[in-house]
Length: 239
Image 1 (cartoon, rainbow, N blue to C red):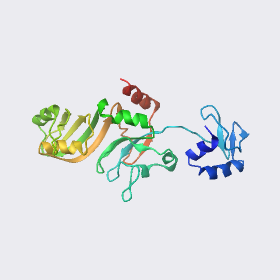
Image 2: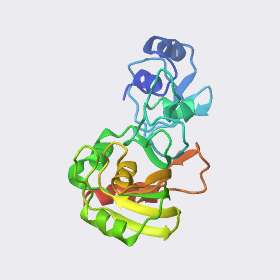
Image 3: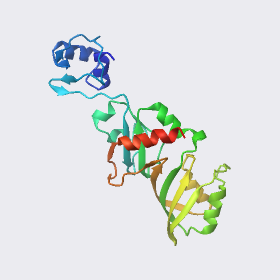
């Protein structure tokens, strides 16, 4: 990769600004001063420094966020805060995007990456990637609902959902449940409960495929996936 492209990709300025940076003598590769913007570098094998600080370059970024309510699962919006707005600038420069969407008022696991191929595999309807949600329900969830969800329910627009696995954690006027589905229709969990005469009052995504929410993350916090998590995610996709 050309040194000017690498520095520009990392947010050190436009190509023109990066050229000026190189001319100033601020950049070294393996302790050798580099001023030629066309110089090719091996980011995996060579040590690149800027003003004596080592620059780490990676092609892809994989982040797990505990999405807070009130924030959009989008890259940008004119009026509302997005999950990308919550990222540090050093992560924003990779131009990542959320993998799928969580409703504005829904919390929980959100994968953010710039790996379009991985995102496509996770979101492809053909893959049937399971997603598990925890929810509080206004209304008593019964075994009849469990059976209905296992068969698939009819949404308000006539769509017949694929079977969902509903587990009752706490029964009563305010029930608590876990629901695993393999689709991602608009407001699907809420609409599935509306189909059986109940209302979701709190919703949190806990898992997506083999990836589980790190519950040490506070709302709005995020971290990079561990090597183990990333390996699980990649291996899961080839099964």
